Length: 365
Image: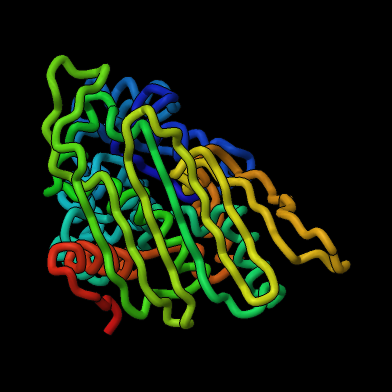
């Protein structure tokens, strides 16, 4: 049995960590091997409420990460707090030798990430970063099709995403409007999707990027006054993959007048795949998958055909990471450790540098 402690677990079932982690761990496929045994929040009151909701002993309701780090009964600690706190919360856990699961992004800058990598090596615990799109059944189905060779050589891929809600979140998400926190569209959702792209098709040989803030002030239904912001609300990445395929990626936050949508096409010499959704967060809500030109029988009038994909284990598709952590990776690369996350962060920093300097960038030595 793997004993789990979660930092930032709310007593509310509607919160992200509650829905995607705590409830997933109650699924039969996971509950036989995982046990939620400790929680940590910012106050005694919220910790007690969380422990009561999730069946954790009151003696395991903590208010400091160090208390979890020093608890010999805890094997795996999940860091589910907002991004600016990841570094300070995670460091003592690593130094105590705990296995640690940190939500994506790992930290706010490369210096912090390097420190966490070093601490993980010293502590010796296993690490996971929540880039769960890799473990999504639909992404694994795409990988299966690509690896079968039925598409032939991949020649190009294009991702286009629009979202009309993420600019207008309640005040508890205001930290995402501050560019210094690196908790915006250019890192969070784009990081998830770009990571899935690279998992399927390989890394970029080189890239060019444009990162912009089109909306420095916004009015939301949750704020009395306009919100000032300097964080990016759009990112464009274009480049050549190491395989030689061309890649184009665009993610844009918009006012409510533009409908949210997501479309990702992967074109091969013999056929193509397309993923479509009305939500850009494919790591949470899997898109539909369609194929073109892959019929065994010649078709004089080919069209896009939906491909059957198994349902995820649970909302958010995080449960698949827990499965791979205990059962092993059925497909290599499903799990991303701190070193793998650092690679993705280097890619995103290359995008930011390209945008600032107007130059083409490489992020792999």
